[in-house]
Length: 166
Image (cartoon, rainbow, N blue to C red; front, top):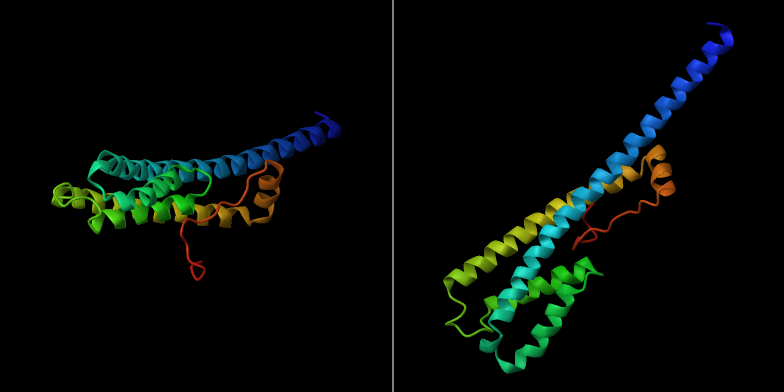
C-alpha cells in the first residue's frame, strides 16, 4: 500500500470516528428526551386519574364550586403548559381534601388515594426535573450544543421549579 492510499485510509478512519461521535451525541440527547417525556406521561396519567375521580363525584359537589372545578379540569387537560397542568391538579386535590365533596363520598380510602397520587406526582416531578437538569447541562457542552442546534434540540423547562433552585 502506497503513501497516498495510507493517507486516504487514515482520513476515512477519522471521518468514521467523527460520525460515530456525532451519532453518540445525538443518541444521548434522544435518550434524555425519551426519559423526560416518559416521566411526564406518568405525571399526566396521575393528573387524569384525579380529574376522573372528581368527575365521577360531581353530583356530590357544591353547586357554587362546579364552575371552578370545571375550569381546573380544563387546565389539567390543556397540554400546552405543564406548570399550569400541575398547579391545577394540586389545587383540585386541595379542594378535594378540604371537603368540597360530601363527606360520605370523600372517605378515608379516597383521601388516602389522593395523598398517594399527589406523592407520586411530586416524586415524578422531581425525577422529571432531574432529567431536565441533566439534559440542559449536557446541551451546554460546546460540541453537544452545536449538534443540538443542527438537529433543533431545544432546552426543556422545569416544572414548578422556584428561581432559587439550580
